[in-house]
Amino acid sequence: MGCSMFEERACEAIFNDLVRKYAGQGKYGFEFKRESCVRYANKRRGRLDLVVKVIELRRYRICKLIHYEMKSCMADLKSGCGINFHGDYNYLVYPKDSKLYVNKGINITFERAKDWLEKHGYYRVGIICMNEDGELTVEREALSSRARSVV
Image (tube, rainbow, N blue to C red; front, side, top):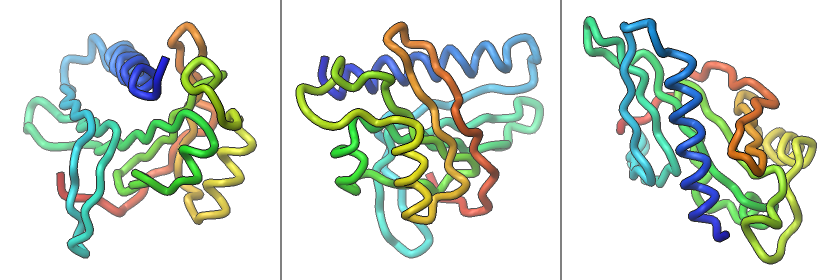
């Protein structure tokens, strides 16, 4: 399984998780964008693995902008490619056992991910682990951030 297969499974799991979380409330909708390009106020551009807009249906306004970055191993995380944590809530998503998704590389663990994020100043970023069955475990909740990108 390649990285794209991991991203496909992770996006599907995130979608299912959000539907379960908000199902039956009838007042929220979602807009999902995979591999979305964004432009920030400083004119810098970036690419996000998954952007979710949680929309209040009555007023059709965006309530939350959630960014998800999928990283399959420590080398992928350390590469710096695609690290764009500029949503209201931001999450790093990694596989429980990256040997399923890449041939080489050091597995990401919660401690390694937490240390790397804090070393680079990402204290408000949440961490989500996806196991072999595609189930998500939120290991650290994201804290609200006021930085907002234009999508």
